[in-house]
Amino acid sequence: MVVTGRGAGRARPVRIVDVAALAGVAPGTASKALSGSGQLRDETRERVRRAAEQLGFTPDGVGRALSSGRSFTVGLLTTDSIGRFTLPVVLGVEDALGAGDVAVLLCDTRDDPLRERHHLRSLAARRVDGVVVTGRRTDPREPVRTDVPVVYAFQPSRRPEDTSVVVDERGGAVAALAHLHALGRRRVAHITGSERHAAARSRAEAVTAAAEGAGVPLVAGPLHGSWSEEWGRRALDLLLRQVPDVDAVSCGSDQIARGVCDRLRELGRSVPDDVAVTGFDDWDVMALASRPPLTTVGLEMHEVGRTAARLLLDAVAGRPRPGTVVLPTHLVVRGSTVG
Image (cartoon, rainbow, N blue to C red; front, side, top):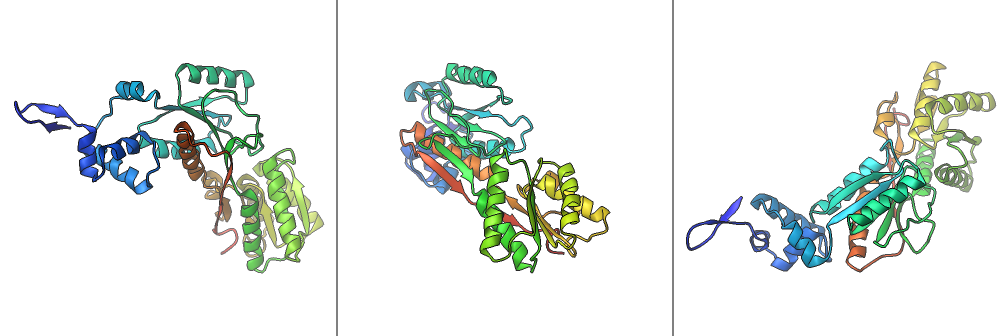
């Protein structure tokens, strides 16, 4: 779209002043909103973005880069080849950066240190403004070596002074247990993944401590195994040999919970009437396909990406926020606990 100029009647390209006028802000504010810089309210950025879209405004990328010293590109480094956790993080990052016309370059390291170093060199050659690092685990990782700002999303850095965004896994596990107790379940067991994984340890520790604190200790577990439906099925068989009258199973992942539900159904036990089951992660492929659908803990991975991107923009603008930001989880109640 073009705006008609004066004089000879020739059309001229839409300028930032036109966007600012339509959005009702100053040109400088419009420029900051579209570049992702400055401390502006989300509604202001969104109003400017809508005005830019309505007018068909296209920033001069080359001129903007030369004048600002930025490339308006960000690297996103991940170890999550499957994309289970990375995809919602990417969507959140793009939501936060899109208003500023910042491009995201996705690099999959496949858990290979050599590949990671190669991607970091490539991102440096492209002069990216910063890097978001994420992965499929919550175990703290070694910090990456680069000269640009870095924010870690979901998988934190081992270095406390780095900026990391994580989810409150312990709080989510406690909320799931409190839900089971509120339903009158008192013979609760916990089945989770391998003790090698920080997520399995933290979730199990939180459930165990909360159960003891409530005066209703777990009747069995934590039972540690793999993050799989098969482990959920086998663990349930082991559990029922020990505690045949168990009335609830708290699971460390949705895969495990779905296996537990399938095995209970095969054994003629009703879910949730006989045994209530909770999962963790709110992975819709598992949670919604389970029969019945799983009550589970949502991780808000989209918000993890949005928050990480905003923190990265602040760091690029010279306002880094070192330390770890912990985002809340939320309990999603479905048929595996409430019929």
